[in-house]
Structures are given as structure tokens and as C-alpha cells.
Amino acid sequence: SDVALLEMDPLERHYLGVFSGRSCYSADLDTNVEPPEGWVFQNLRQMWETWDEELFHLAGLAFQIVNWHRIRRFCGHCGSPLDRNSGSSGKKCPECGMSYFPPISPAIIVAVTRNKELLLARAHRHPPGMFSVVAGFVEPGETLEDCVKREVMEETGVNVKDIRYFGSQPWPFPHSLMIGFTAEYAGGEIAVDDDEITDAGWFTADNLPKIPPKISIARKLIDWFVNQSIGER
Image (cartoon, rainbow, N blue to C red; front, top):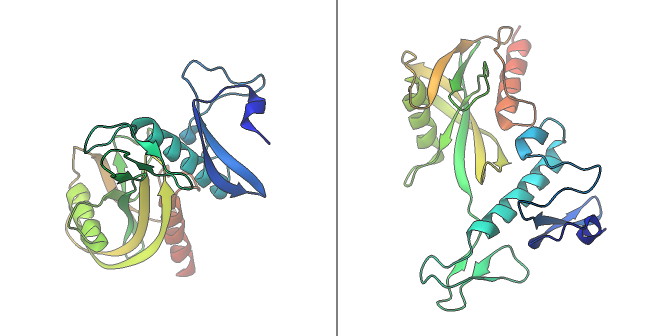
């Protein structure tokens, strides 16, 4: 009912909205604060297979708001300390009037199919043995479709066509919006980008490697492919 009952004395707290009929807040704690007895601190990635999607998204919002307020303390234009806006998550400079809001970085993620095969890649950042669909950040001046084509080509050497919207997911690592697509193979041989990708290949629904957990849109895209493949049998 009140974060004060946890006796952790937060540096700042931020109202997030209502969840299951209760007001929710995020709290920024000093790094040397110990959790209450019977509690432990966990990071988001440790919890993404424990929570349902709605609670995970709320926790992701909390993390993004706390992190942004922690690093955005001064005006990027004149250097003055920023004031918090009442009633919003933004801040405003009292000297020059510049307004700031938590950033969102759009990124595409795409399931590329070739007949009954799915293109999966293994990035340096992935846990050992895990493969996923291709993803990457949108660059200035790009459409989402242009980004899909560029990222797939840069990372795997494959051309795509018939790009279709699939869905989206907020992804708080640290402040992304994942925009999912499906696409079909249009040509090219796999040639991985050693900077980001260590391996890539075509996989069938009954011969998949280790893949991301179900809470991620990457897994939703892979499950879509599997369901499509089963339906065609």
C-alpha cells in the first residue's frame, strides 16, 4: 500500500499508473540499500521467465522511468538542472524552457522464411547455444521496411521480400520498442556479419536450436512459424 512500509528510503519515486486496482510506483534506491528481510533484488532479465507479460511490461516501464530520471538530470542545451513535470514522466529546464521525455528507440525484428525453413542467427550477446530471428535498430531516414531489408542483408547476406507487419513489444533493454515483421526469402547465400553475428542458418520447425523464452516477441515470431508449418502438413 505504501513503499515507505518497506523501509528502504528511496531517493526518488515515480507514479506509473494503476495495476490490478492498485496505484503503482517505481523507486530509485541507493546502491548500498539492503532489501527487506525475505526479499531479494533481481534484474529484469532474471525475471522474464517468471512473470507474465503484463507484469513484465510494467516492471520494464518502472526500470525505464527510474533509469531515465537518474541519467537525465541536466539540460542538454544550457546545462541547468531540470525540474520534474507534474502529471507526466517528463522534465523541463527552468532556464531555457527545453522539455525532455523518456526516449524510445525503435528496432525491427523479423522472421524470414524460405518454404518450410526459418532463418535464425546467433549473436555474440546471446547465451551459449541460443539462436533467434534477426533484429536491429532503425537508423535516421529509414522506413521500417528499409530497416528490415538492411539488417537482414548486413547480418546474414540474405535478401527479403513481402515484408508484413506482425506486432510490437516494449523492450526495456534499455528503452527499445521492438516492431515485428515477417518476410520471405528473395535470394542470396548466408554470409554472417562477424561484428554482431557468429552463426546463422535455415531451420525447420522440427529441428530448432535453443530459442528465446516465450515472453519475447522473438519467440512469438518463431512460434508463428512453427504453427504455420504444422498447419501446412
